[in-house]
Length: 137
Length: 315
Ligand code: SF4
Ligand code: SF4
Ligand code: SF4
Ligand code: FES
Image (cartoon, rainbow over all chains, first blue to last red; front, side, top):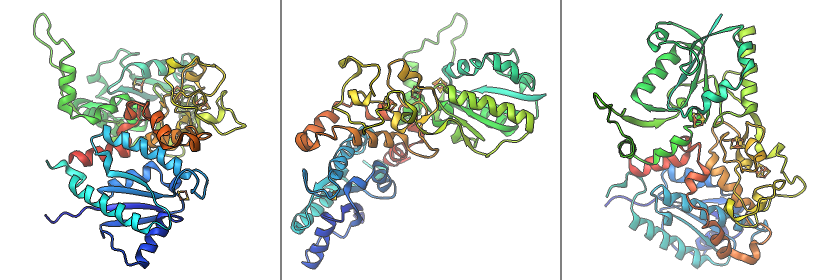
């Protein structure tokens, strides 16, 4: 059992990204299998960024953004992200990839413990799903 | 005289008709070109055609679904000075590219179960499909002429290009994607122009009484115009039918299925997000069945989604 899940996390710099910083300052531990990518807003995360993450080795993709309805700094980038994620999940399901490998969460800058919980939960879930590639039974 | 050959791979016949629709302009081309092969139009045996050691222009229509098609396409392409990939099957894999979600054997079995191969004397044999690909997956063409079949903008440009090549012997730039480098929406007669497009929800085409002057997206009907290259004179839209994206991506190399998904996400209920919230948006999006078939109708074979599927099944 040497396999470790790889996770790419797109964090909005205003909320989830800031929460990740805070988690660091508070010395809260989260799973090291996560590679955070800080984006200016979740509205910036395109379906092609999500698929590219999977194609480049991610077993799971996590997106963390500002709470709806009113916290996004660019008015509605988070809603746009929600709609894109819904569509990409449907697409994943159709091509035989578990939609659970893609997860969107709203995490404010003050919610460092939630960030840690979400990251750990998600890592555990991906660990259970196993590697994305090569569908070994 | 220059030698022009039209070689079909896996075609439906639509591209043949589109090319033939050049009509009188074909006669103009015949001043410079001799058609050395085009099964639908000229009577010439393949074996005779294959005796030619070189041709000037090859137009390849259709995708590649059998070993024979692949071999022939490679063979003939290697003898051609200018290679034109005509039609979305040839350029992007087209509609048959949707079968890349299945194994060739599954495709074969599905066909075999529906086709009667019995004949009076000896039974016919169905060709064995290999993994389907676009012509552009096996050969690097000089000119890409997308559309299913190619629309008027592409056909006009192709005609001009063939004429110019005959007159000057030059083709520039080397890899050329025909059609205009803009989205189909740009010059669409229904483009609301003054405002951003807003989708009120997701509606099936039979659920709305279509207003034939209003943008389809604004009536809730999926239209692929925003991320489709301008290759036609809005022929579907003028016939009161939404664009299904046959022109492929606005730029070569872009994944148009993902772009279509983004554009729908951008337009859907933008005016009401904060009142319907996630649940309301999800309910609308759930009405979209067959995401792959709708957003990738012509381009799945060239997509990141195709690659991800391959990665998933371990190929
Ligand atoms: S591109 Fe369309 S019209 Fe041309 S062969 Fe393919 S399916 Fe037929
Ligand atoms: S979405 Fe369709 S109907 Fe609306 S402007 Fe674009 S091409 Fe025209
Ligand atoms: S409107 Fe769209 S689907 Fe129809 S011919 Fe033009 S590009 Fe193709
Ligand atoms: S600014 Fe954080 S999701 Fe838009």
